[in-house]
Length: 148
Image (tube, rainbow, N blue to C red; front, side, top):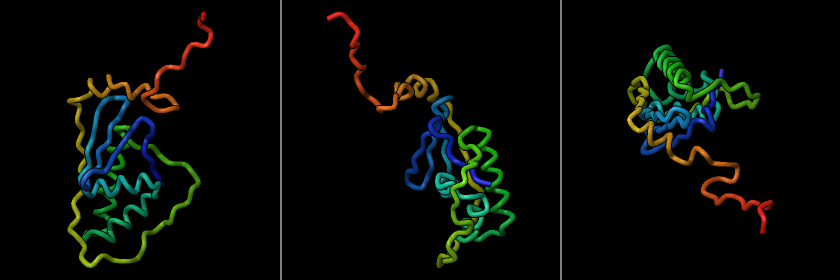
């Protein structure tokens, strides 16, 4: 199974190892810690869930069932918040990450999704929501049918 970011409704950026996502439809914004940001990056690459679990197992010191449960829980939260959607494309990505092990595997902690609603009004008022295919900002096209 694969998931993808719910574009164009969701915009995101990774900043200092933290994923920041904004849902333009609701005005809510979200953050993910470093483990969550790694998962988010792999979701952006349309990696299968098995790949994500294997990659985290390669990087972190934790049993596979612990990592899988944490990934499944996060994917459920992200889906409920409509930040990701199932990806049914046939684009095939490698099923397993590279076998190169890091010198030291860090302890694993389940990713945490935080939701913020304190700026909903401002985000929903922002004119970026009215962006056309040419981008923003652009002056309106002149009315060619107007009387000269």
